Image (cartoon, rainbow, N blue to C red; front, side, top):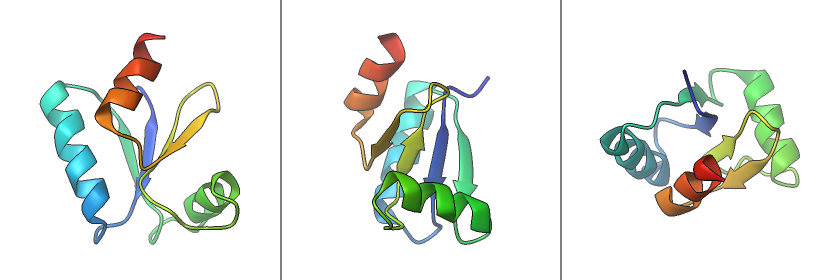
Length: 79
């Protein structure tokens, strides 16, 4: 089961780096490309004051992180 949703784009270097770190850590997530899913872009804009900043992570409890480190994500998951 996915621990959170990661909003990204195919060209985002930060997204690629974070995805690799998460996969190596065995953390499951759902990835959504905001360029392919217009409603997803709106979610990212809402979280980021109108900006389409990725990677944006949204957790099941509704909290979000923008361009987090893997340490920030793991801290949130164990809290």
